[in-house]
Image 1 (cartoon, rainbow, N blue to C red):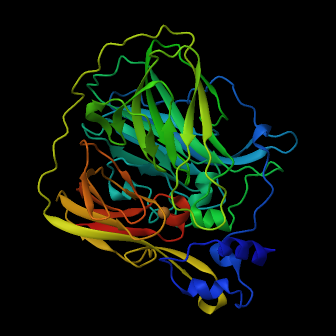
Image 2 (tube, protein in one colour):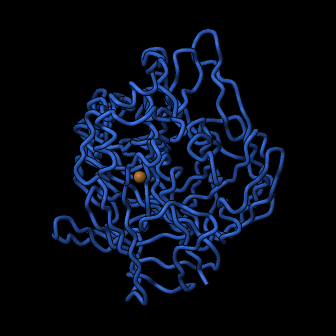
Image 3 (cartoon, rainbow, N blue to C red):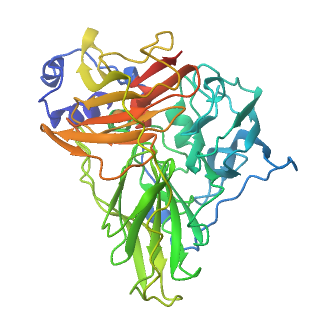
Length: 500
Ligand SMILES: [Cu+2]
């Protein structure tokens, strides 16, 4: 069974640009192949999409209560533990969740605040809490170097500097099992509010989009070979853990939406037909100027945006759609199709013209001339070494090794990082502990400067694309950088920079 599935996948693989050991494998002359080499299992029968109800009112995200009572200090506890949720009749579904919530509770602080989170691990695996995108010291980053053992606890403590306002999240990042811990439900959201925010009077919505691959028997399905290779995409793209909820546009004619792509691997090419869609923020907070007139917005896994949605001339119901996006998946995969993420009901608001947004939202200075340069290359290599099938996802030709430092940077020094994707698939680049500015994209020798200045911690690379970014780290220590298709990260598409 395993062999047949594997060969079916293999038969339609594009061979161009791949390691040619693969062609030998395709002849079928190899000895029995060991799928377990990829940690993958054969596909299981999935629950029907209609088995989860749709159309319920959109949930708000639960907030993590601040227990400190002291101004400038946010103190709370997070517990990672299994929780049973009745999704299908019969067997409840076991998720792994922070404080019993999927997605995890919202941590909401103001720039300048100190954050103290007492974390307890009630899982059967070691885990960490990684503060995705936040400028935190290396030893507070929840990196694979600082696991919290099953039954263990630790205190995370960091101060968020003025200027760090933005839209972040937290999720596990242990040496192994990051993909599994996230797909079982461990991911929560984090907002750092600015002391001065010119858009603060616009009512906000928080939309956390996450993947669920649910087996017909109610279990969360294990990842199969296709998930391991292309990144896991279940049959559900949930919004605030709901299938196609209803967003009643009833907070006035204009809303500010923060959107998280918390999927393991699914890209979100967001389209909201006929509604005004204005980009005002990225991972690291507001842009300098609103970007108006967008018809679609691509969010790679782990990316966040802030958009302004105006009721405009909409009077009825419109679906927020994830339109088909080709990211170079390999093998015999289903054709990409549009997914309705949620329904927006504009019928309760008077549309019409809204007053213009402020032309300038805040200042983002150029980071200045880089003092050093680095080059990162993403590649994929497939082989049948020793009769064992393996897909390797590499950075600079290597798989992740926790005992190897790949790069060295100087604290506070601005560097130019050139990231080249020499593979056939898209890969989103993410670096820990800091935000960067994209300088330009290059494709087929054509260089396109970034159209606006923005702070990001994640940027997508299409196949054969080069992206140049400027970045600086502000703490010493070891930080990870990796592909944020979690199965690729788990397979070794990750490196370490030591900041000295
Ligand atoms: Cu990747």
